[in-house]
Image (cartoon, rainbow over all chains, first blue to last red; front, side, top):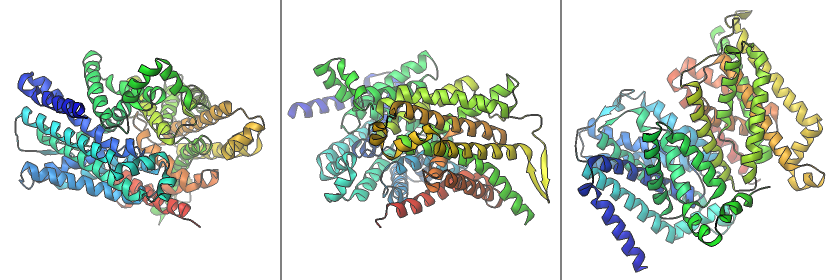
Length: 314
Length: 286
């Protein structure tokens, strides 16, 4: 136990020291990677623990982006106030969508999330205070180091939230929902409330990531705020790393960010093909993610992949 | 009043295609228990197949339709046999994730191969129309609507009257019993997914005749197909078709009387409302 705490503290310290030693480009890349890891960790709460995949969390990211941008650019508020506005918007949207849709079991939530982000983008494009199609410019604040530490702090907070969830009644309830929702309901888990709470928590983390990114870039527009490729990335990072585990999504996100960065520089725009293939192969060969695969490979060798592939065959 | 009737006609013509899209999705869902998130991508591929058969090979779009359907059938059969069949008994989460990944791959490859430009299939007779007592019925959309009806009716007949159709319905109702009667589930599942893909391909080809096709067109069509399939009822092709027509009309009215920029947003909101209303009635204990 102490070893694990020490290792976590050491990893945080090393990551926190990166901007002091590294080149600016590495710090900038680090901000992107840490924010993506936070998104994957947020997705993990409902998608990984409760087994309800969302394919539209970029809606919350966009709301966080716009909440922050509107508060800062239109109402001249502090960054902290902006972040709070963004998080509140994300949470409100999560409840508005979650309360009616998460009452239903099965694939309905996944389908509704598919269209959510595009719908919000369409609305933002027609709202004057959000700058319509053109977007908004935020006050300029140049400090990669600060944004790096903020992103790291968000990831640490998200991971701590997931770790606490995993040990709580709340987390146990989510896992029960994933394994057998009817049985969970019979055992007294308030399934709808748990699912909505998980979505709201995910939405707040996702919106905060959007807000940090907005102030870092100092410019928001509908296309980049509601970027649907974010959905692909966060889902794949979480699933590849290990859905329903505490560290899996973080490891998956940092690893895949690295590989896709390398791919993007080697063969431009291969990244999205890569992500699509990774998710298909990951679900077929290692549905429990990298974390479980590491253990399985040690115990069973390469047979681990074959066993996974055969498990659900007809 | 005439304007209103004209708008309704336009909506109905597109709605027939929505119905056809939803039929393919509902068939796959009902039989294989797969919510196919790449359904929209299959529609998109069908659209491009007809587009290129017309522009490069010079085939009439309606003559190209069976070829496109055959190609999509083969693709769907192979996908089910080699990929989705491997996770046939897995939780819904896994099939959602895999079809989502396949959708990303298909969209990316389409963007690479066909570029992101918007395209329409424009046969030489595209401008012609029929006049029905003041109403203008454009020829090509009307023919596309007719083709959609014919395909829906053939699916209905094939499921009801043929041996394979009975095997498909039996697999949907009770797979164990169907196997005892000699149904080979792997073959039936691949056939079913192939048929769903072929219907999606046909819908995509016809959609390219009345609207624009792009690599991303599937994004909004997957949720639409899904909700229409639920509204109509998974095992009632005629109900699904009616659901498609209703959505087409609702969209046309929104575009004409409210704001055309909000068509997708309002159609999406409407779908969510209907979904909640319909499913909560279904799930409520009797």
